[in-house]
Image 1 (cartoon, rainbow over the protein chains, first blue to last red):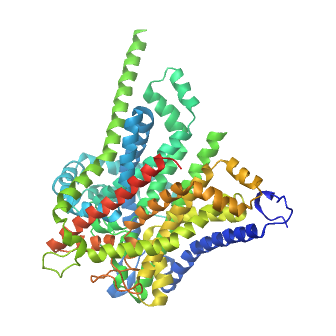
Image 2 (cartoon, chains in turn yellow, cyan):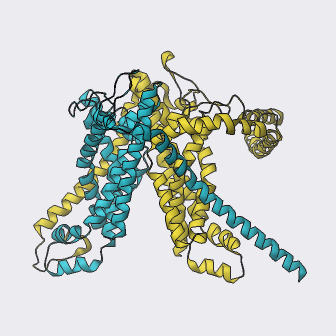
Image 3 (cartoon, rainbow over the protein chains, first blue to last red):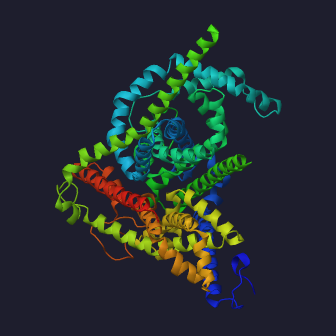
Length: 359
Length: 281
């Protein structure tokens, strides 16, 4: 009879009817919401059923998307999403963590309040406004100034490209040997090095268009910075003051304290914060749709227009039907699953840190 | 000793240099805000006029016209989404704080967490499958439903946070008076945290008012104004998107002005919540 939470008993001795109804109601609402979430997966899977049956899991590796020919492969969008989000994270991570450190360690309380507020405002700006600004303000600047500059210093036939190719070859070679040992591949060192050279030479190659992968990555970086900053701040707050004081007490300078006490202790949490930012970047739609240039092919240069999983849905869904529509839904399903995995990973990392700091 | 002091000098230099870098990074984080705001004012302010708020858009090539259809549409969509999203979010928040460590609450917490992380375009797909397909057409209902799903986790989270702040003494005092639990919650605790809950709802509204992706193929758009809840409906963000990607100068001007108005509204909502929170619960 005693089903009310915390095992509380009423003084009158009988379970209150109102309470029973109320808690049953709360439970019902909870399960409705949970069902809503599960239903989301099921309904989108249902939308994409035709495409799943037609192409199967090959869908993710086919690198062509040609609606008139009924060829649907998501590889260009997966590459576009990964590349633009990776650029965003590479730019945003140092800025966000730096800002969080600035807010905690350097800024006087008043200034910290103002800066934190401004960063919050950045998070409040709607995605479509970022897109508008990106198209009409940032893209021309990228086209006329930043991209030509990058092409001169990091483009093909520069020291940077050559060095990068060698570094990448060095990183990839052990994996190649490993794969070779299992008889999985027959790529030689020469061809590997040639591939890496092609990749590095192509990175900042091509005409500066303004719209493209790099610009969308930059816009995404601005958009995820508030999220990553806020999360990093929370992580830094979990580092106990005693650790900071111990470092300072041993004669560490402020920077050494930041490096040893804050960054090292909070490493797992900070990585979690960055991964949550990555999750946001992966799912971001409107701003990217507006600045990425919308081209359904795997880009070979950061200057080239591309397409992400989210942007292709935004661009084509309204005019699609049949297998095309279903394939777009399949792209959406993939995006859904990827962002779930990324978020669960980040949450696990943050939780791991919280447990660590309590111990 | 001398060697030590040289090393100390180096450490100091590294220290100052690194701290300066941190300052520069913080500056880099907020600089875009000023650039974006400056351009919104620069490009958008000129188009601000009475007709912007009262007229519907004119065909391509004609100058003038406004975004009245999008403004009313956005208001209707926000009303619809609040009607569903706010009660559901509130109930979820109460469930999270009341059911504590039960299996239901644990599952709900995971669902809410994951719901926050779902890309909004995917929510659009869901609303498409659940509402647009059965109703055989784009409608305000579908758009409102999609936005409601965006709202639920935000409202639920903030409600739970606020309820957590209520001292258990209030709970106990109510129970000691012989009140049933639901009365304690609804009559004693909720009225006390009204402001905090309002804050959460306003934040959710601010977020939803700028959402574009879930509306593209649910509410769609129209350029005539309100035609009932079962037909397509325009909204500020979608309209801005359409105009920004068009090649018409007048329309682009409307996009900038629309963006300025939208950002103004969103900032205002954020400011109100900030003032409300400063006064504390």
